[in-house]
Image 1: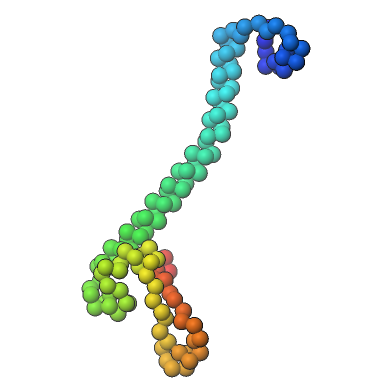
Image 2 (image 1 turned 120 degrees about the vertical axis):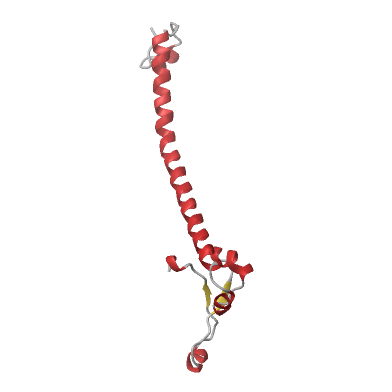
Length: 123
C-alpha cells in the first residue's frame, strides 16, 4: 500500500505502487491546502498593512489640502502659495527657499536651503 513514507523508496526500487484510496487522497489534499494557506497568510497580512498605510497617507494629504484650501488668498500669499499650487505643496512637489531674517544670517548662508511644505499635523 502506498503511503507518504515509502513513496521515495518505492520509486527508487521501481516497485509497483498500489492505487491511492479516497481517504489518502483527501488527507494529502488537506495537508497541501494547509501548507498553501500557511504560506499565503503572511503575504496577505503584509498586503493589508501596506493598503492601510497608503489609505492613512491619502487621508492625511486630503486633510492638509482641505486646511490649505480653507485659508484666504492673503494667507496663502504669505506662505508663498497660490491655490493652484496646493495639491503639489501637499504631495511635496513645491519647494521654496528659506529667506534669512537678518543681513548677518543671509551672509552666512552659502547655499540656499529649500524647505518642503509640511501639513501642520505632521510637523
